[in-house]
Amino acid sequence: MSRKVRVRFAPSPTGGLHMGGMRTILYNYLFARQNGGEFVLRIEDTDQTRYVPGAEEYIFECLKWAGLEPDESPLKPGQFGPYRQSERKPMYRSYAEKLVKDGNAYYAFDTPEELERMRQEFKSEGNASPQYDRLTRGNMRNSLTLSNEEVEKLLSEGTPHVIRIKMPESETISFTDMIRGEVSFDSSLVDDKVLLKADGMPTYHLAVVVDDYLMQITHAFRGEEWLPSAPVHILLWKYLFGIDAMPQWAHLPLILGPNGKLSKRDGEKYGFPVFAMNWTDPRTNHTAEGFREKGFLPEAFINLLALLGWNDGTDQELFTLEELVQKFSIDRVHSAGAKFDYEKAKWFNQEWIKRKSDAELAPLVKQLLATVAIAPTDETLVRVIGLVKERCQLLPDFVQQSSFFFEAPKQLDLDAVKPKWNDAKRLFFAELIRNFQLTQTWVGADLERNCKEIAAANNIKPGEVMLPLRIMLVGGKFGPGVFDIVEIIGKEETISRIEKALHLL
Image 1 (cartoon, rainbow, N blue to C red):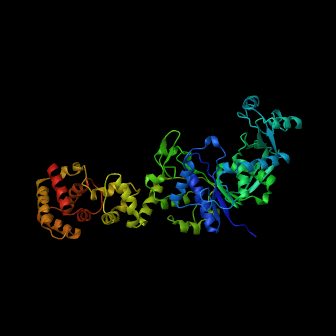
Image 2 (image 1 turned 180 degrees about the vertical axis):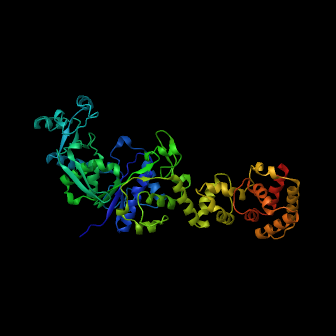
Image 3 (image 1 turned 30 degrees about the vertical axis):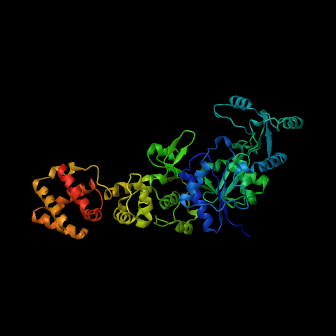
């Protein structure tokens, strides 16, 4: 009988959630939903020296914003808790001790000074940074080189020690990756990783295997940077639980920036976000910009992430989360790195802005306008959004594209008007003001017809007065139809803006 699908994402609370991590979450989520399974979030806080206050809360906020909330987590415990590794600490030692007892791991009592001496002694031309492995372990202070009596004495005295895996010599270790197919390693090239640290905390290598087993994880999707650790993890599965209990693995391709792997620092360098949301490091008070604050809709963010390394085999580019759940398949994830294109990312966002109803966008735009002290009525705002949303790539674009509907522009690009400005145009605008003052019904189409009639009577082409009129109302050469603007801002405001511009001209 096949087991129920259970997948997990296991972040370390050490900083902002990079888009690579968010894509791993998304693929986990899609696979779980598609297979009627469960998506687990487990906090891997075994390295207490790197723990950053606030990072865990930040991770949950990112998932909530993106609409990818887990079925089980520290905030929503299920039957496989606790969901923080630091709270599971007592259980790991027994597994590490079992490995020692079975001859698959050993106690290592080396001091930092002894480790450094080994690195210096074994340094050679072909090996600039020697590791603790089959070649060096025989020269170190561990339970493989010390007598049983010496080991027992050191342990009973509470001598600081770690437990290391004993990597076998010249063994081929293989597994079938869901994306890459058959992958093999030579065990001789892998060092004896620490499994249990001196403070009793497990390293990632031991904890991930024990936790995946105890939480009944069936599939593990992780970044390809974890491939070199695979032989250690496979051996731990074999030694502790049997290879048949091991989840199926998929190692996801890297997300590439302009120069290779997209790093957390690339955003600052190239001017685009790499984190899901703004992340302020409490240690430095430095803030890295996120997709949310840059003005991306969560639907667009999810959509662009899904296509960084996957496609459904068609030309379709816009997918809802429901469509992704339906169409996603791990065998269509590429093994090669996926290049992130910020211009394409903005295109996705623009398409999603256009897909949203004006009423759905209104609360988001209202929030942005409030930052520049504009508080429109909901009814007017919805009308304005309908006129300008096709011009907005990012949500903050709405401020520039719509603020002139609610307050007169502070600056006018009159340099664009002056070269062709003359008395005939001045007289035209004076007459247009009089016409507007006498108009009883304020409807854009009627006002435009009046304007064209006045222009014709003055032997002026309508096109020659439209640009000056737009700049008088908006401040620059942008915005929707001039008479859509005129209708919404109303008679008094329209006349006031034209008079002000005439005075300046």
